[in-house]
Image 1: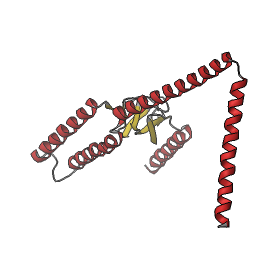
Image 2: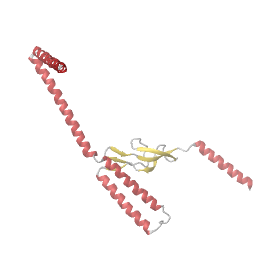
Image 3: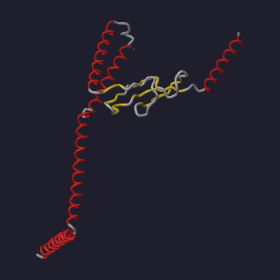
Image 4: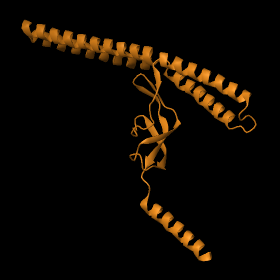
Length: 207
């Protein structure tokens, strides 16, 4: 019984507090001039309209992203099929038992047709391969896996693609795994030349 009375007292206090707030707000509004009241209402209306516009824009953006990139995960998984096709073709071409055989030739032709069809389907869905060979290394598109000495290329130029990368419209679906060029180490080059000279000199002395 005592507990119920305490709860009732708390409830009465909350109601009274709410009434006091309402009375204060009402009294404040009564103190405002009609012009100020109109201005306050206009401000509230402007804020409400701005919030509605922001929500509408967010909804439109989410709808566009869902339409444009809804198949992003599926597209990324599909790239594994292309990788497997390339690995299968590579394995067949390097099989000693099949080299120069008619079976190898037909199998590779079939794999090429399937691969071209898959790439064509990807292109129709705005998914395209990243051009990498002879391009400057771009961290946004490429992932360097190794360096290859090449005096004919500027350092940091892509000289080999280990795994193809793809874009879906303006989004990176998967980066290209690449090898990039680097200048020959002069010390190593001089060391090799010295070793060759010593070997040649040693051979000439033996003769």
